[in-house]
Length: 151
Length: 183
Image (cartoon, rainbow over all chains, first blue to last red; front, side):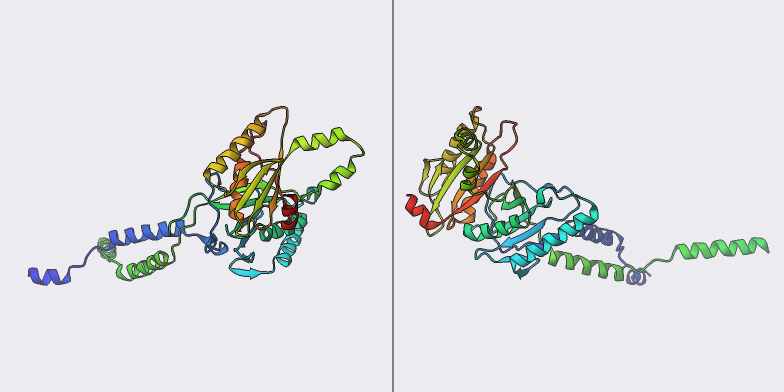
């Protein structure tokens, strides 16, 4: 009689399923959707005083990854920086016009996030900054690690 | 007749309540989802930003040309903008750093030299009669970006008379040939 019962016994999977769903919820919450736009191979400068960017406004900032040779990557693709920034600035001006936001003194109210490799020579980074300035960008956020990463 | 009908319905309800779902299939799917999330999990790097307002560099010769013999105005301009000059070697390390014309750092930009620069800038910003609101850094084009960021960091730490952090920092690239002749 007891042997017959033990054959039919089924474990209660509900607590296990609960735990798995909790784990899934955790991973879904901490998933990094913006990771694709960041070039994680870059070695950023390390500065203790760097602070997280405070987002204001609805418009997305322009993010540029600059490697040690001055090549610019956006969303994992190498781009022609001059063409790209000109196109982005034109698109942004159109958007601002639609939103009815005035452009004061030709200054675009969107920050440029510069993620440049610490080994990049200044003249290469400066060249890219100049292109941004020529298109009307004035606010720049220079990315840095808050502490040295362990590899 | 009516009673037997309601009894039958009650019995059917009780039977339906005791039906148990097979959770194994759902658990399989949940484990697959969990595996996917674990494998694709990449924590975001801890990044900070240095926010700067970078107006396009204005050639100083133009500023002086617009002032018709006004020495006083020239002095006012000199009072508001603090000039730093950074010279680098071929490897991109700092070899010399001058605040206005005073050499503050000679050699590599280590912790001691960074502290010396910070103290110098702090003492200059503490003088209330000379309200600096902008720093212009003349940078050797060969300087590594990481080294420049250390200098910008020190500049960014300086407090303006209203207590806010220094944000108006502009760069100008110095030609290597011009630097060597200036030396």
